[in-house]
Image (tube, rainbow, N blue to C red):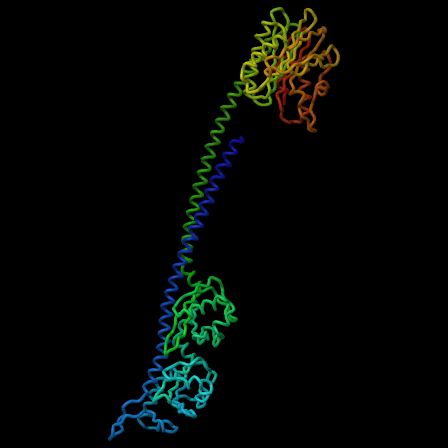
Amino acid sequence: MGFQARRFVWTVLGIHLALFVGVLLIVYYASHRIYASVRADAIDSARQTQDLLGKQIAAGIAAYYESTTKVLELLRPLQVDDGAVASTQPLIPPDVPTPLLRRGTLRERIGDSLWAQLQDRVTLLFAMDRPGLPRIYPIGGTDQLMPVEALSKAGQWLSAVTAPSISPIIRLNGNAGNLVAVPISGPGRLLVAFVPLARLDQMVLSDVNRRAALGGVIYDSDGTILCSSVPELLGKNLFKHARDPRISEASMRITQAGLADSALFDTPFTYHDQVFSPAILTYVPVKMLGTTWWLAIGSTLDSVDEGIDSIFHEATRWALFVVVSITAILVSTSVQLIRGRMRLERLTHNMLTRELREARHIQLAWLPDDGDRIPSLDIAAVNHPASHISGDFYNWFSLADGRVTLLIGDVTGHGMSAAFLMSTTQLLIRSTMQRVGDPGACLDEVNRQLCGQLFNGQFVTILIVVLDIEHGHFDIASAGHPLPLMSEGNAYQALDVDSQLAVGISDDMTFTTSRLPLPPEAAFLLYTDGAIEIMGSTGDQYDVAGLQSSLPPAGTSSHRVIEEVVRAVNRYRHGQPLADDLTLVAIQLVSATVGSRELVDSTIQ
Protein backbone atom coordinates (compact mmCIF):
# COMPACT_ATOMS: atom_id res chain seq x y z
CA MET A 1 0.00 0.00 0.00
CA GLY A 2 1.45 3.37 -1.04
CA PHE A 3 1.96 6.34 1.21
CA GLN A 4 -0.95 8.26 -0.31
CA ALA A 5 -3.25 5.27 0.09
CA ARG A 6 -2.21 4.76 3.71
CA ARG A 7 -2.72 8.44 4.42
CA PHE A 8 -6.17 8.30 2.84
CA VAL A 9 -7.09 5.22 4.88
CA TRP A 10 -5.97 6.85 8.11
CA THR A 11 -7.75 10.07 7.17
CA VAL A 12 -11.02 8.24 6.49
CA LEU A 13 -10.68 6.20 9.67
CA GLY A 14 -9.84 9.33 11.66
CA ILE A 15 -12.85 11.24 10.28
CA HIS A 16 -15.22 8.36 10.94
CA LEU A 17 -13.77 7.79 14.39
CA ALA A 18 -14.29 11.48 15.13
CA LEU A 19 -17.88 11.18 13.89
CA PHE A 20 -18.40 8.09 16.04
CA VAL A 21 -17.03 9.85 19.11
CA GLY A 22 -19.20 12.86 18.27
CA VAL A 23 -22.28 10.65 18.05
CA LEU A 24 -21.39 9.01 21.36
CA LEU A 25 -20.97 12.41 23.00
CA ILE A 26 -24.27 13.63 21.56
CA VAL A 27 -26.07 10.49 22.71
CA TYR A 28 -24.45 10.73 26.13
CA TYR A 29 -25.32 14.41 26.43
CA ALA A 30 -28.88 13.84 25.21
CA SER A 31 -29.33 10.86 27.55
CA HIS A 32 -27.94 12.87 30.43
CA ARG A 33 -30.25 15.78 29.66
CA ILE A 34 -33.26 13.49 29.30
CA TYR A 35 -32.39 11.69 32.53
CA ALA A 36 -31.87 14.99 34.36
CA SER A 37 -35.14 16.40 32.98
CA VAL A 38 -37.16 13.29 33.83
CA ARG A 39 -35.54 13.10 37.25
CA ALA A 40 -36.28 16.77 37.92
CA ASP A 41 -39.92 16.21 36.93
CA ALA A 42 -40.09 13.12 39.15
CA ILE A 43 -38.60 15.03 42.08
CA ASP A 44 -41.03 17.89 41.53
CA SER A 45 -43.90 15.41 41.41
CA ALA A 46 -42.64 13.79 44.62
CA ARG A 47 -42.49 17.24 46.24
CA GLN A 48 -46.07 17.95 45.28
CA THR A 49 -47.20 14.54 46.50
CA GLN A 50 -45.37 14.95 49.79
CA ASP A 51 -46.70 18.47 50.20
CA LEU A 52 -50.26 17.22 49.72
CA LEU A 53 -49.66 14.26 52.05
CA GLY A 54 -48.01 16.53 54.62
CA LYS A 55 -50.92 18.95 54.61
CA GLN A 56 -53.35 16.07 55.09
CA ILE A 57 -51.33 14.71 58.03
CA ALA A 58 -50.95 18.22 59.48
CA ALA A 59 -54.69 18.67 59.29
CA GLY A 60 -55.10 15.30 61.02
CA ILE A 61 -52.73 16.32 63.83
CA ALA A 62 -54.56 19.62 64.33
CA ALA A 63 -57.91 17.81 64.29
CA TYR A 64 -56.56 15.28 66.77
CA TYR A 65 -55.83 17.94 69.38
CA GLU A 66 -58.69 20.26 68.52
CA SER A 67 -61.23 17.42 68.83
CA THR A 68 -59.78 16.63 72.28
CA THR A 69 -60.13 20.28 73.21
CA LYS A 70 -63.71 20.45 71.97
CA VAL A 71 -64.65 17.47 74.13
CA LEU A 72 -63.11 19.17 77.16
CA GLU A 73 -64.96 22.35 76.38
CA LEU A 74 -68.22 20.45 76.84
CA LEU A 75 -67.58 20.68 80.59
CA ARG A 76 -67.91 24.46 80.54
CA PRO A 77 -71.01 25.99 82.39
CA LEU A 78 -74.30 24.77 80.97
CA GLN A 79 -78.04 24.72 81.80
CA VAL A 80 -79.05 21.85 84.18
CA ASP A 81 -82.64 20.98 85.28
CA ASP A 82 -82.46 19.83 89.04
CA GLY A 83 -86.16 19.09 89.41
CA ALA A 84 -88.40 21.90 90.80
CA VAL A 85 -86.08 24.88 90.18
CA ALA A 86 -84.12 25.48 87.13
CA SER A 87 -80.85 27.22 87.78
CA THR A 88 -77.66 27.98 85.95
CA GLN A 89 -74.63 26.49 87.69
CA PRO A 90 -71.27 24.95 86.74
CA LEU A 91 -71.13 21.25 86.06
CA ILE A 92 -68.25 21.11 88.57
CA PRO A 93 -69.13 23.45 91.49
CA PRO A 94 -66.11 25.14 93.06
CA ASP A 95 -66.93 23.93 96.59
CA VAL A 96 -67.41 20.25 95.83
CA PRO A 97 -64.73 18.21 97.63
CA THR A 98 -63.09 15.03 96.34
CA PRO A 99 -64.54 12.89 94.93
CA LEU A 100 -65.46 15.57 92.46
CA LEU A 101 -68.74 13.95 91.39
CA ARG A 102 -71.03 11.78 93.45
CA ARG A 103 -71.77 8.45 91.95
CA GLY A 104 -75.14 8.23 90.23
CA THR A 105 -75.65 11.97 89.61
CA LEU A 106 -76.21 13.52 86.19
CA ARG A 107 -72.83 15.21 86.38
CA GLU A 108 -71.14 11.89 87.16
CA ARG A 109 -72.80 10.27 84.19
CA ILE A 110 -71.67 13.17 81.92
CA GLY A 111 -68.08 12.87 83.22
CA ASP A 112 -68.02 9.14 82.55
CA SER A 113 -69.35 9.74 79.05
CA LEU A 114 -66.67 12.34 78.26
CA TRP A 115 -63.91 10.08 79.59
CA ALA A 116 -65.20 7.26 77.41
CA GLN A 117 -64.84 9.55 74.38
CA LEU A 118 -61.30 10.67 75.26
CA GLN A 119 -59.64 7.58 76.66
CA ASP A 120 -58.57 6.32 73.22
CA ARG A 121 -56.51 9.54 72.83
CA VAL A 122 -55.59 10.53 76.40
CA THR A 123 -54.35 8.52 79.37
CA LEU A 124 -55.15 11.08 82.05
CA LEU A 125 -58.00 13.54 82.67
CA PHE A 126 -58.28 15.71 85.75
CA ALA A 127 -59.47 19.11 86.96
CA MET A 128 -57.48 21.51 89.09
CA ASP A 129 -57.96 24.76 90.96
CA ARG A 130 -55.14 27.29 90.75
CA PRO A 131 -55.77 30.01 93.41
CA GLY A 132 -53.62 29.37 96.45
CA LEU A 133 -52.64 25.75 96.86
CA PRO A 134 -53.76 23.91 93.75
CA ARG A 135 -56.37 21.26 94.27
CA ILE A 136 -56.57 18.26 91.94
CA TYR A 137 -59.77 16.40 91.02
CA PRO A 138 -59.10 13.15 89.09
CA ILE A 139 -61.72 12.30 86.47
CA GLY A 140 -60.15 9.56 84.34
CA GLY A 141 -56.96 7.52 84.44
CA THR A 142 -55.63 4.53 86.31
CA ASP A 143 -52.64 6.08 88.06
CA GLN A 144 -53.72 8.47 90.85
CA LEU A 145 -50.18 9.86 91.09
CA MET A 146 -50.00 11.05 87.49
CA PRO A 147 -51.87 14.35 88.15
CA VAL A 148 -49.39 15.16 90.91
CA GLU A 149 -46.48 14.32 88.56
CA ALA A 150 -48.03 16.50 85.84
CA LEU A 151 -48.36 19.39 88.28
CA SER A 152 -44.76 19.02 89.43
CA LYS A 153 -43.39 18.99 85.82
CA ALA A 154 -45.70 21.50 84.18
CA GLY A 155 -47.03 23.55 87.10
CA GLN A 156 -45.54 26.81 85.88
CA TRP A 157 -47.05 26.34 82.42
CA LEU A 158 -50.45 25.34 83.91
CA SER A 159 -50.52 28.42 86.11
CA ALA A 160 -50.20 30.64 83.01
CA VAL A 161 -52.96 29.02 80.88
CA THR A 162 -55.82 31.40 80.05
CA ALA A 163 -57.11 29.75 76.87
CA PRO A 164 -57.10 26.22 75.43
CA SER A 165 -53.40 25.38 75.06
CA ILE A 166 -50.90 22.59 74.44
CA SER A 167 -47.86 22.21 76.66
CA PRO A 168 -44.29 21.41 75.54
CA ILE A 169 -43.33 17.75 75.63
CA ILE A 170 -43.16 16.17 79.11
CA ARG A 171 -42.87 12.64 80.41
CA LEU A 172 -45.46 11.15 82.77
CA ASN A 173 -44.98 7.67 84.12
CA GLY A 174 -42.22 7.16 81.52
CA ASN A 175 -44.43 8.16 78.57
CA ALA A 176 -43.73 11.24 76.42
CA GLY A 177 -46.68 13.44 75.61
CA ASN A 178 -48.33 16.85 75.91
CA LEU A 179 -50.85 18.36 78.31
CA VAL A 180 -53.98 19.89 76.80
CA ALA A 181 -55.48 22.45 79.20
CA VAL A 182 -58.89 24.14 78.88
CA PRO A 183 -60.06 26.80 81.42
CA ILE A 184 -63.58 26.17 82.87
CA SER A 185 -65.75 27.98 85.49
CA GLY A 186 -63.61 31.06 85.34
CA PRO A 187 -59.85 31.48 85.22
CA GLY A 188 -59.12 29.51 88.35
CA ARG A 189 -60.15 26.03 87.27
CA LEU A 190 -58.66 23.95 84.43
CA LEU A 191 -59.52 20.70 82.77
CA VAL A 192 -56.24 18.96 81.86
CA ALA A 193 -55.72 15.92 79.64
CA PHE A 194 -52.44 14.11 78.96
CA VAL A 195 -52.05 13.09 75.29
CA PRO A 196 -49.33 10.44 74.79
CA LEU A 197 -47.28 11.06 71.67
CA ALA A 198 -47.19 7.33 71.03
CA ARG A 199 -50.92 7.37 70.37
CA LEU A 200 -50.55 10.44 68.16
CA ASP A 201 -47.83 8.70 66.21
CA GLN A 202 -49.97 5.57 65.89
CA MET A 203 -53.02 7.42 64.66
CA VAL A 204 -51.50 9.97 62.23
CA LEU A 205 -47.95 8.80 61.34
CA SER A 206 -48.05 5.02 61.57
CA ASP A 207 -49.17 4.60 57.97
CA VAL A 208 -46.35 6.85 56.72
CA ASN A 209 -43.66 5.32 58.91
CA ARG A 210 -44.60 1.78 57.91
CA ARG A 211 -43.52 2.52 54.34
CA ALA A 212 -39.90 1.76 53.61
CA ALA A 213 -39.40 4.82 51.37
CA LEU A 214 -41.30 7.29 53.60
CA GLY A 215 -40.75 8.68 57.05
CA GLY A 216 -42.13 11.49 59.16
CA VAL A 217 -41.00 13.67 62.05
CA ILE A 218 -43.07 16.08 64.18
CA TYR A 219 -41.19 18.78 66.06
CA ASP A 220 -42.23 21.89 67.90
CA SER A 221 -41.19 25.47 67.21
CA ASP A 222 -38.08 25.02 69.36
CA GLY A 223 -36.93 22.06 67.25
CA THR A 224 -37.70 19.32 69.80
CA ILE A 225 -38.72 16.11 68.06
CA LEU A 226 -42.12 14.92 69.30
CA CYS A 227 -42.73 11.97 66.96
CA SER A 228 -40.34 10.14 64.67
CA SER A 229 -40.07 6.99 62.58
CA VAL A 230 -36.77 6.44 64.42
CA PRO A 231 -37.55 6.07 68.19
CA GLU A 232 -33.99 7.05 69.16
CA LEU A 233 -34.62 10.58 67.88
CA LEU A 234 -37.55 11.33 70.23
CA GLY A 235 -36.83 14.34 72.42
CA LYS A 236 -33.73 15.34 70.39
CA ASN A 237 -33.42 18.86 69.08
CA LEU A 238 -33.57 19.02 65.30
CA PHE A 239 -31.62 22.27 65.21
CA LYS A 240 -28.84 21.26 67.59
CA HIS A 241 -28.24 17.51 67.23
CA ALA A 242 -27.88 17.34 63.44
CA ARG A 243 -24.33 16.33 62.55
CA ASP A 244 -25.00 17.30 58.94
CA PRO A 245 -25.32 21.10 58.85
CA ARG A 246 -27.59 20.83 55.83
CA ILE A 247 -30.36 19.36 58.02
CA SER A 248 -30.19 22.02 60.73
CA GLU A 249 -29.85 24.86 58.20
CA ALA A 250 -32.80 23.71 56.08
CA SER A 251 -35.02 22.97 59.11
CA MET A 252 -34.24 26.27 60.84
CA ARG A 253 -34.63 28.30 57.64
CA ILE A 254 -38.03 26.85 56.79
CA THR A 255 -39.24 26.97 60.42
CA GLN A 256 -38.30 30.65 60.74
CA ALA A 257 -39.99 31.47 57.42
CA GLY A 258 -43.19 29.83 58.68
CA LEU A 259 -44.23 28.53 55.25
CA ALA A 260 -44.38 25.03 53.83
CA ASP A 261 -41.31 24.20 51.75
CA SER A 262 -39.08 21.31 50.62
CA ALA A 263 -35.35 20.57 50.72
CA LEU A 264 -33.43 18.16 48.48
CA PHE A 265 -30.49 16.10 49.77
CA ASP A 266 -28.72 14.39 46.87
CA THR A 267 -26.18 12.66 49.11
CA PRO A 268 -26.59 10.66 52.35
CA PHE A 269 -26.98 12.76 55.48
CA THR A 270 -26.53 12.11 59.18
CA TYR A 271 -28.74 13.12 62.05
CA HIS A 272 -27.59 12.24 65.55
CA ASP A 273 -26.21 8.69 65.10
CA GLN A 274 -28.51 7.78 62.22
CA VAL A 275 -27.39 7.78 58.57
CA PHE A 276 -30.15 8.40 56.05
CA SER A 277 -30.22 7.81 52.32
CA PRO A 278 -30.54 10.77 49.90
CA ALA A 279 -34.06 12.11 50.24
CA ILE A 280 -36.58 14.88 49.69
CA LEU A 281 -37.84 16.47 52.92
CA THR A 282 -41.09 18.43 52.92
CA TYR A 283 -41.84 20.73 55.87
CA VAL A 284 -45.48 21.60 56.66
CA PRO A 285 -46.57 23.82 59.60
CA VAL A 286 -49.19 22.43 62.02
CA LYS A 287 -51.07 25.35 63.59
CA MET A 288 -53.44 24.66 66.50
CA LEU A 289 -54.47 26.08 69.87
CA GLY A 290 -52.18 29.11 69.58
CA THR A 291 -49.01 27.15 68.88
CA THR A 292 -47.19 25.92 65.74
CA TRP A 293 -45.63 22.54 65.32
CA TRP A 294 -43.88 21.28 62.20
CA LEU A 295 -44.25 18.08 60.26
CA ALA A 296 -41.20 16.98 58.23
CA ILE A 297 -42.08 14.16 55.89
CA GLY A 298 -39.46 12.63 53.61
CA SER A 299 -39.06 10.06 50.88
CA THR A 300 -35.82 8.56 49.65
CA LEU A 301 -34.58 9.39 46.17
CA ASP A 302 -34.46 5.64 45.57
CA SER A 303 -38.21 5.72 45.23
CA VAL A 304 -37.88 8.55 42.71
CA ASP A 305 -35.09 6.83 40.80
CA GLU A 306 -37.01 3.57 40.61
CA GLY A 307 -39.73 5.41 38.75
CA ILE A 308 -37.43 6.86 36.12
CA ASP A 309 -34.92 4.02 35.80
CA SER A 310 -37.23 2.00 33.60
CA ILE A 311 -37.79 5.01 31.33
CA PHE A 312 -34.10 5.85 31.23
CA HIS A 313 -33.08 2.25 30.60
CA GLU A 314 -35.53 2.07 27.71
CA ALA A 315 -34.15 5.34 26.32
CA THR A 316 -30.62 4.03 26.79
CA ARG A 317 -31.42 0.85 24.90
CA TRP A 318 -32.77 2.86 22.00
CA ALA A 319 -29.77 5.19 22.15
CA LEU A 320 -27.43 2.20 22.00
CA PHE A 321 -29.42 0.87 19.06
CA VAL A 322 -28.97 4.20 17.29
CA VAL A 323 -25.24 4.23 18.10
CA VAL A 324 -24.80 0.68 16.82
CA SER A 325 -26.75 1.53 13.67
CA ILE A 326 -24.70 4.65 13.03
CA THR A 327 -21.52 2.73 13.74
CA ALA A 328 -22.52 0.10 11.19
CA ILE A 329 -23.23 2.83 8.66
CA LEU A 330 -19.90 4.53 9.37
CA VAL A 331 -18.01 1.24 9.11
CA SER A 332 -19.76 0.38 5.86
CA THR A 333 -19.04 3.84 4.47
CA SER A 334 -15.42 3.65 5.55
CA VAL A 335 -14.97 0.25 3.95
CA GLN A 336 -16.55 1.41 0.69
CA LEU A 337 -14.46 4.58 0.62
CA ILE A 338 -11.26 2.69 1.37
CA ARG A 339 -12.04 0.03 -1.20
CA GLY A 340 -12.86 2.66 -3.80
CA ARG A 341 -9.69 4.58 -3.02
CA MET A 342 -7.62 1.41 -3.10
CA ARG A 343 -9.07 0.49 -6.49
CA LEU A 344 -8.30 3.99 -7.74
CA GLU A 345 -4.79 3.81 -6.30
CA ARG A 346 -4.28 0.41 -7.88
CA LEU A 347 -5.51 1.60 -11.27
CA THR A 348 -3.41 4.74 -11.02
CA HIS A 349 -0.38 2.72 -9.96
CA ASN A 350 -0.84 0.28 -12.83
CA MET A 351 -1.24 3.13 -15.29
CA LEU A 352 1.84 4.93 -13.98
CA THR A 353 3.82 1.70 -13.95
CA ARG A 354 2.81 1.04 -17.54
CA GLU A 355 3.72 4.59 -18.56
CA LEU A 356 7.06 4.37 -16.73
CA ARG A 357 7.75 1.04 -18.36
CA GLU A 358 7.04 2.53 -21.76
CA ALA A 359 9.17 5.56 -20.90
CA ARG A 360 12.00 3.24 -19.86
CA HIS A 361 11.68 1.39 -23.17
CA ILE A 362 11.87 4.70 -25.02
CA GLN A 363 14.88 5.67 -22.92
CA LEU A 364 16.65 2.39 -23.65
CA ALA A 365 16.01 2.99 -27.34
CA TRP A 366 18.23 6.06 -27.09
CA LEU A 367 21.07 3.87 -25.84
CA PRO A 368 23.17 1.82 -28.27
CA ASP A 369 22.33 -1.85 -28.63
CA ASP A 370 23.92 -4.95 -30.12
CA GLY A 371 23.43 -3.63 -33.64
CA ASP A 372 25.67 -0.65 -33.01
CA ARG A 373 28.97 -2.52 -33.48
CA ILE A 374 32.27 -0.69 -33.97
CA PRO A 375 35.22 -2.56 -35.51
CA SER A 376 38.30 -3.08 -33.29
CA LEU A 377 36.35 -2.25 -30.12
CA ASP A 378 34.82 -4.57 -27.52
CA ILE A 379 32.19 -2.49 -25.70
CA ALA A 380 29.78 -3.49 -22.91
CA ALA A 381 27.57 -1.23 -20.85
CA VAL A 382 24.94 -1.31 -18.12
CA ASN A 383 22.46 1.32 -16.97
CA HIS A 384 20.44 0.51 -13.84
CA PRO A 385 18.10 3.27 -12.59
CA ALA A 386 17.60 3.97 -8.87
CA SER A 387 13.89 4.32 -9.65
CA HIS A 388 11.95 3.50 -12.77
CA ILE A 389 13.59 6.07 -15.01
CA SER A 390 17.29 6.81 -15.17
CA GLY A 391 18.98 10.20 -15.42
CA ASP A 392 22.26 8.61 -16.61
CA PHE A 393 23.10 8.08 -20.25
CA TYR A 394 25.87 6.72 -22.42
CA ASN A 395 26.48 6.36 -26.14
CA TRP A 396 29.06 5.60 -28.79
CA PHE A 397 29.06 6.38 -32.46
CA SER A 398 31.47 6.92 -35.33
CA LEU A 399 32.28 10.30 -36.80
CA ALA A 400 32.60 10.99 -40.49
CA ASP A 401 36.43 10.87 -40.34
CA GLY A 402 36.44 7.38 -38.80
CA ARG A 403 37.04 8.37 -35.18
CA VAL A 404 34.84 6.86 -32.47
CA THR A 405 33.03 9.03 -29.92
CA LEU A 406 32.33 7.61 -26.46
CA LEU A 407 30.22 9.60 -24.04
CA ILE A 408 28.65 9.16 -20.61
CA GLY A 409 26.61 11.64 -18.59
CA ASP A 410 24.63 12.13 -15.42
CA VAL A 411 21.69 14.47 -14.95
CA THR A 412 21.14 15.69 -11.38
CA GLY A 413 18.38 13.72 -9.70
CA HIS A 414 16.49 10.93 -11.30
CA GLY A 415 12.98 10.26 -12.48
CA MET A 416 10.98 11.74 -15.34
CA SER A 417 12.48 15.24 -15.30
CA ALA A 418 16.02 13.81 -15.36
CA ALA A 419 15.03 11.45 -18.19
CA PHE A 420 13.71 14.33 -20.34
CA LEU A 421 16.86 16.37 -19.79
CA MET A 422 18.98 13.29 -20.49
CA SER A 423 17.27 12.75 -23.85
CA THR A 424 17.68 16.39 -24.79
CA THR A 425 21.35 16.43 -23.80
CA GLN A 426 22.18 13.21 -25.62
CA LEU A 427 20.54 14.48 -28.81
CA LEU A 428 22.44 17.78 -28.58
CA ILE A 429 25.79 16.03 -28.07
CA ARG A 430 25.32 13.64 -30.96
CA SER A 431 24.26 16.32 -33.42
CA THR A 432 26.93 18.76 -32.24
CA MET A 433 29.80 16.25 -32.32
CA GLN A 434 28.98 15.29 -35.87
CA ARG A 435 29.36 18.95 -36.75
CA VAL A 436 32.32 20.20 -34.63
CA GLY A 437 34.26 16.97 -34.02
CA ASP A 438 35.97 18.34 -30.87
CA PRO A 439 34.84 17.29 -27.36
CA GLY A 440 35.55 20.68 -25.72
CA ALA A 441 33.86 22.64 -28.50
CA CYS A 442 30.92 20.26 -28.33
CA LEU A 443 30.54 20.89 -24.58
CA ASP A 444 30.69 24.66 -25.19
CA GLU A 445 27.83 24.46 -27.65
CA VAL A 446 25.75 22.06 -25.50
CA ASN A 447 26.26 24.26 -22.43
CA ARG A 448 25.02 27.36 -24.27
CA GLN A 449 22.00 25.45 -25.52
CA LEU A 450 21.07 24.06 -22.07
CA CYS A 451 21.59 27.39 -20.29
CA GLY A 452 19.12 28.95 -22.70
CA GLN A 453 16.45 26.49 -21.58
CA LEU A 454 14.58 26.27 -18.26
CA PHE A 455 15.28 22.99 -16.45
CA ASN A 456 14.36 23.98 -12.85
CA GLY A 457 18.00 24.41 -11.80
CA GLN A 458 19.14 21.02 -13.05
CA PHE A 459 22.56 20.49 -14.58
CA VAL A 460 24.43 17.69 -16.36
CA THR A 461 27.88 16.15 -15.92
CA ILE A 462 29.33 14.87 -19.22
CA LEU A 463 32.43 13.01 -20.27
CA ILE A 464 33.32 12.79 -24.01
CA VAL A 465 36.14 10.59 -25.31
CA VAL A 466 37.07 10.55 -29.02
CA LEU A 467 39.26 7.59 -30.02
CA ASP A 468 41.53 7.99 -33.05
CA ILE A 469 42.71 4.39 -33.42
CA GLU A 470 44.40 5.07 -36.75
CA HIS A 471 46.70 7.77 -35.35
CA GLY A 472 47.05 6.24 -31.84
CA HIS A 473 45.65 9.01 -29.65
CA PHE A 474 42.37 10.08 -28.10
CA ASP A 475 40.77 13.41 -27.14
CA ILE A 476 38.92 13.84 -23.85
CA ALA A 477 36.84 16.63 -22.24
CA SER A 478 34.97 16.52 -18.94
CA ALA A 479 32.18 18.77 -17.66
CA GLY A 480 32.25 17.87 -13.96
CA HIS A 481 32.07 14.14 -14.63
CA PRO A 482 34.27 11.52 -12.87
CA LEU A 483 37.32 10.78 -14.99
CA PRO A 484 37.52 7.30 -16.54
CA LEU A 485 39.81 4.49 -15.46
CA MET A 486 42.32 3.34 -18.10
CA SER A 487 44.50 0.26 -18.40
CA GLU A 488 47.49 -0.14 -20.71
CA GLY A 489 47.65 -3.88 -20.18
CA ASN A 490 48.14 -3.54 -16.43
CA ALA A 491 46.06 -2.23 -13.51
CA TYR A 492 43.44 0.44 -14.15
CA GLN A 493 44.36 4.02 -13.23
CA ALA A 494 42.41 7.28 -13.23
CA LEU A 495 43.35 9.70 -16.02
CA ASP A 496 44.95 12.93 -15.01
CA VAL A 497 43.13 15.57 -17.04
CA ASP A 498 41.31 18.80 -16.22
CA SER A 499 37.59 18.77 -15.52
CA GLN A 500 35.41 21.88 -15.68
CA LEU A 501 32.00 22.58 -14.15
CA ALA A 502 28.92 20.73 -15.26
CA VAL A 503 26.95 22.08 -18.18
CA GLY A 504 23.77 24.05 -17.62
CA ILE A 505 25.22 26.22 -14.86
CA SER A 506 26.81 29.18 -16.64
CA ASP A 507 26.67 30.01 -20.36
CA ASP A 508 30.12 31.69 -20.42
CA MET A 509 31.97 28.52 -19.46
CA THR A 510 34.77 27.29 -21.77
CA PHE A 511 35.63 23.60 -21.89
CA THR A 512 39.06 22.38 -22.92
CA THR A 513 40.06 19.25 -24.80
CA SER A 514 42.99 17.10 -23.68
CA ARG A 515 44.81 14.77 -26.12
CA LEU A 516 46.51 11.65 -24.79
CA PRO A 517 48.26 8.68 -26.47
CA LEU A 518 46.19 5.57 -27.13
CA PRO A 519 48.12 2.33 -26.44
CA PRO A 520 47.29 -0.61 -28.74
CA GLU A 521 45.77 -2.69 -25.91
CA ALA A 522 44.16 0.13 -23.99
CA ALA A 523 41.00 -0.51 -21.96
CA PHE A 524 38.67 2.07 -20.44
CA LEU A 525 35.96 2.03 -17.76
CA LEU A 526 33.54 4.97 -17.86
CA TYR A 527 31.18 5.31 -14.90
CA THR A 528 28.83 7.70 -13.13
CA ASP A 529 29.04 8.74 -9.48
CA GLY A 530 26.37 6.17 -8.62
CA ALA A 531 29.11 3.52 -8.89
CA ILE A 532 31.47 5.13 -6.34
CA GLU A 533 29.00 6.67 -3.88
CA ILE A 534 27.30 3.40 -2.92
CA MET A 535 27.02 3.08 0.88
CA GLY A 536 28.10 -0.13 2.57
CA SER A 537 26.79 -1.67 5.77
CA THR A 538 29.38 0.29 7.77
CA GLY A 539 28.29 3.61 6.27
CA ASP A 540 31.44 4.01 4.14
CA GLN A 541 31.32 4.84 0.44
CA TYR A 542 32.59 2.46 -2.20
CA ASP A 543 34.80 5.22 -3.78
CA VAL A 544 37.24 4.98 -6.71
CA ALA A 545 39.65 2.70 -4.85
CA GLY A 546 36.89 0.14 -4.30
CA LEU A 547 35.94 0.36 -7.95
CA GLN A 548 39.58 -0.22 -9.02
CA SER A 549 39.88 -3.22 -6.72
CA SER A 550 36.81 -4.84 -8.29
CA LEU A 551 38.20 -4.71 -11.86
CA PRO A 552 39.51 -8.00 -13.32
CA PRO A 553 43.02 -8.28 -14.83
CA ALA A 554 43.86 -6.47 -18.06
CA GLY A 555 42.87 -8.27 -21.20
CA THR A 556 39.55 -9.44 -19.80
CA SER A 557 36.61 -8.85 -22.11
CA SER A 558 34.48 -5.76 -21.54
CA HIS A 559 31.63 -8.07 -20.90
CA ARG A 560 33.42 -9.73 -17.99
CA VAL A 561 34.60 -6.37 -16.65
CA ILE A 562 31.03 -5.16 -16.29
CA GLU A 563 29.91 -8.42 -14.66
CA GLU A 564 32.72 -8.34 -12.09
CA VAL A 565 32.12 -4.70 -11.18
CA VAL A 566 28.36 -5.21 -10.78
CA ARG A 567 28.94 -8.31 -8.66
CA ALA A 568 31.33 -6.39 -6.39
CA VAL A 569 28.88 -3.50 -6.07
CA ASN A 570 26.06 -5.87 -5.07
CA ARG A 571 28.24 -7.49 -2.42
CA TYR A 572 29.24 -4.13 -0.99
CA ARG A 573 25.72 -2.72 -0.61
CA HIS A 574 24.32 -5.90 1.07
CA GLY A 575 20.93 -5.68 -0.56
CA GLN A 576 20.49 -1.97 0.21
CA PRO A 577 18.64 -0.11 -2.59
CA LEU A 578 20.63 2.08 -4.95
CA ALA A 579 20.71 5.71 -3.89
CA ASP A 580 21.59 6.87 -7.41
CA ASP A 581 21.55 5.55 -10.95
CA LEU A 582 24.35 3.08 -11.73
CA THR A 583 25.92 3.31 -15.21
CA LEU A 584 29.09 1.58 -16.45
CA VAL A 585 30.72 1.48 -19.91
CA ALA A 586 33.73 -0.83 -20.54
CA ILE A 587 35.86 -0.50 -23.74
CA GLN A 588 38.63 -2.84 -24.89
CA LEU A 589 40.78 -2.12 -27.98
CA VAL A 590 40.72 -5.54 -29.57
CA SER A 591 39.27 -6.97 -32.68
CA ALA A 592 35.98 -8.12 -31.15
CA THR A 593 32.34 -7.42 -31.24
CA VAL A 594 30.38 -5.44 -28.69
CA GLY A 595 29.04 -7.51 -25.74
CA SER A 596 25.39 -8.12 -25.04
CA ARG A 597 23.87 -5.35 -22.88
CA GLU A 598 20.88 -7.52 -22.01
CA LEU A 599 23.14 -10.20 -20.55
CA VAL A 600 24.91 -7.59 -18.44
CA ASP A 601 21.65 -6.05 -17.27
CA SER A 602 20.57 -9.38 -15.80
CA THR A 603 23.41 -9.29 -13.31
CA ILE A 604 21.99 -6.29 -11.44
CA GLN A 605 20.33 -7.48 -8.22
